[in-house]
Amino acid sequence: MTVDDQDARRIHRLPVDRKAAAALSAWAAATDESTLDATYLDLSGADLSGTDLGLALFCPSVARGIRLREADLYRANLGWADMEGADLTRAVLVKAELTETILRAADLTGANLGSAELYDVDARGACFRAARLNGASLLGNTRLEGADLTDVSVADTSFQATLDDETGVAGMSGTVFGPACINAPDGTRRELAGLALELWLTERGAAVQVLNSPVGTTTYYARIDDEFPRSHPSGVVRRRRAGRLVRDEAFTRNLRWEPTEYLRRYELGHNDTDHVEISQAEADAFVRRLLSRP
Image (cartoon, rainbow, N blue to C red; front, side, top):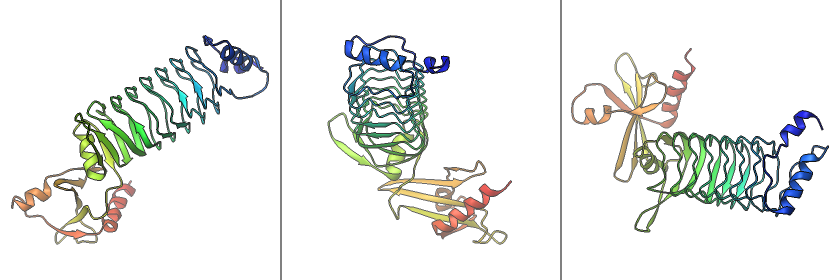
């Protein structure tokens, strides 16, 4: 084993459990490129910070309070692992598998969970501050009540999780697919999708777009005049509806959809610019033209 290999398997503190300590020591001393198999081990209290744990198996295992700061858990299987209170600060969990994993009160500040699969994960009270969940799938009954998602980045993230009023989402940004479930203080539970979920998030400081709005809830309009016909409008506006909730947005020079008062002002007679209803395909074509400009 080279010096670099030894460094990749460094163990800062062994777990209290003797069987787990022996297994970790043997893995760290191995001269081959074997991955860690921690199945059925009790790793509670161990410190494996900065360790290369790619493809490691933790399913199932007990690892309460384990320190994995900046550890590389690429494609690791953490299914059915009890990692309550674990320190995963800035850990790499890209494409990791987490099924029924317990992450209650765990610290995942700055962690990268890109394309990770979370199913029925219990992350109540966990900290995900500034974590990356781009392309991740949060499915089943993944629980985020009381979790801190401040400044989390999402991109095409399946966000079918359970939240509550204590879930912090300020600064969360990007795109998600719903629906999510909201647990109210009185014990009731409601499912939110599309614009309703988007407004719930944005009202709490997020800048998130929910992509899978129900069919027929968005209407598109082209702003036209003698110089700008329907085929090449001066701009496009959309109105999104969820029950009594309405949100109007225009695709702006910032190359994104942003809130607008155009339709409301038109309805009140405060502007003379005309518009016509168009299809989503026409609106998408307008957006593509703007995005393709040098």
